[in-house]
Length: 177
Image 1 (tube, rainbow, N blue to C red):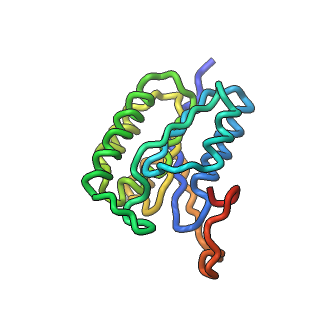
Image 2 (cartoon, rainbow, N blue to C red):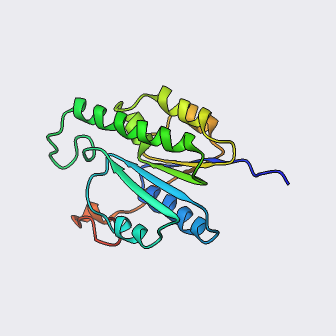
């Protein structure tokens, strides 16, 4: 029997739901006992998914890499520090992708790392090119390059129609983080 081709899946857009969609995909995969790894770029704080994913062990593992989002909420972390963190996170991601021990890997916010220039598009291309044929690779983040759209098997764009933040309602536990 032929093994199934692994897909390159991209969740992008200005709307909420990119990480949530990727986590939903992982949740579904766990139902089939698939081994899943989530590596988050630029996320360095507690979120509900960190606690929840521990309950899905041994099928899912999550690793946060980064110093928080670039230039958000008065962050004083320099671009150089963000680039170093993104590079270290990418090295870990690349090693895990090429290890062949995962069925699905989510590179959460890697598209944003590329668009903010904390990670080179060339490295992302290298990751896609060298992933195992049967492994599914899920990439999330804002401002997806057209070249990545062309390479991906599935691209979904989240479009904001309405958001409570515009009414002064801050991020909500269990909904936004």
